[in-house]
Image 1 (cartoon, rainbow over the protein chains, first blue to last red):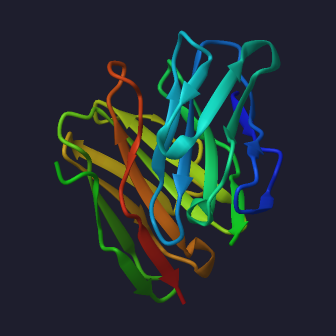
Image 2 (image 1 turned 180 degrees about the vertical axis):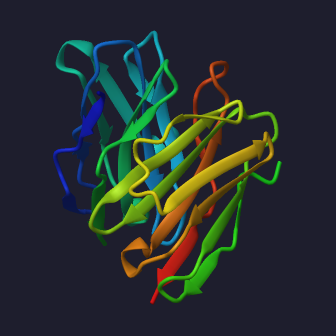
Length: 112
Length: 115
């Protein structure tokens, strides 16, 4: 069965600090990888996604993620966070069989 | 497109009552997912459908939970009887499968409180 592990449950940063959120998955086949963001009181929205090709993918709001197949990882990064990035971030795996699995989420708090 | 529509947005009910949550996916999407989100358990996939057929319901917590998708534009998640531990936000999401890019579009959620 597939699984997704997000290592950091809660991250607290000051504005302008760099961000990296870890995500590892386990699945033996081909996967599609996503990062979703959930701002306080809102529903999940897509941040970025990886299907194939360049393992470094860029998303909205300056976020990017790198797929490292050998490490089964898809870490999310942003060079300089803003207060408005305060949210919960979910890594997700979607297999070709149609099943999605989400990580437990990482809550990011950015202090102004 | 109006996006994924869920109703009601909020539901407060007494323990033992039947609760029905509704979802209208984005037109043209053929996959539909029901999730439950709580502080304790995070985001859990309950069940998902492809072309109106339930594919995997292993996430449904108990027999009190049931989901149906009678047609491509409507799905329900029913809890009967409801219990206080069912209190959560229930999200519905839809996507195109196997075509397109698998991105799931989430609805606004239904916040269920069982007293």
